[in-house]
Length: 567
Image (cartoon, rainbow, N blue to C red; front, side):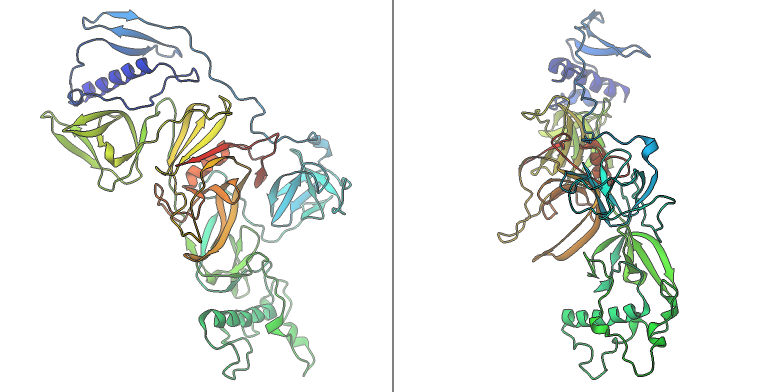
């Protein structure tokens, strides 16, 4: 097949010579597929008459020269003027801008810990100043000594972070001048090098309590009784006590019968065992329980991000990545899914394609000019294509390896012009609803392409359409919980949706680990991405996330990446 590979390369070089250099002055890139005669696709087929332009690079050199090869084998040097350099972004591009300089290292003398699920980072030691981002529970930093509140609401004072910004000791930041603050069962740190920053679990038992700490024996009894009431409401069954059973906690089940008293987190015995005879016990039905404020009772089908497994006496719990506790027997492990597009470079450039047909095949022409199947292609497979050709009245795309794929079986993104107001070095994202494709650009140069799932068809009362328009990313999160209640799909809650980038209201680009339907509409309006794709975009888009932070907000000084959603 060497003749075929040479033919394809020479034809591509002709196309590049006609197109010239890209708008940015860098290397020329393929944009629109050229039509190549099918006769050149047979193994060893000669190049038809005329001259062709080839590109020659000396070994170990960075510069390339071009020459015109005539039919008689002679060459003519056609080297043009030196190309302009590509536009370069300013050094400060994408970085968080702080009003005050970071503290010197010698001032970072106090141990600090994020004790709340989220601890906000302020631009100034003032709760009314801009919020630059936030830390997740369990994050530790050495910080400055106390800085008095310049406004109101932070009585314990602020502490300066190493990179800049301030955290409030009255809003979840725990400090100790002598040693690192203690936290039992610290939540897991996100895996920044992984497509999935956390492990995930699936709630399999209706109305499972999610605790903020390990419960006591009485709290477990109360939770079981209260759960029985909630289950009766859900299923329409008689409530506890309706059949004369006394309503003392239902059927026992997972709630325990008092034998778990010595298994509570603090090691104390059953409080009821120490009470004088005849004195009434606690009112279990109305007992206030230490449940997670956001989601105290979990529905079947909810997703949780999971940390370590904890054993407390005869019971096992899973610590969630957000710091809560759920009984292990209420959860099932979940095998998170993934999908990955392709980063573009000098080797892989436009045009490119993805397979949209389940019955697509990779083909080649044999010596008898007949199409032969090389292999079957899977839907959503990436295909690096060069030119278009016609065989038997049907359009085919020639791959970089010189094979063939039916054009109708492919999704091919169109190169978009630089939007007005976007700098030639600036990063921006184009999302096409009609093709369900996303292309990331640096100026005029596409650097990443993948398939997405945008909003599915809803109803007039409950539309799920992804809005079209132009925005900037206004906040980025390593992970963010998404939940809601829809008439068509019911309640849903997905804890720690990975690599979330909000660009308009509640609409975001984010990873979706629960499906692989990319290339088709599916979401409630967000732009779903494979977790690997979302992670790539997360670290590529602005503002960049400072080390140790879980989320960052765009500001006028640190604007977010432009996102364009079009039909």
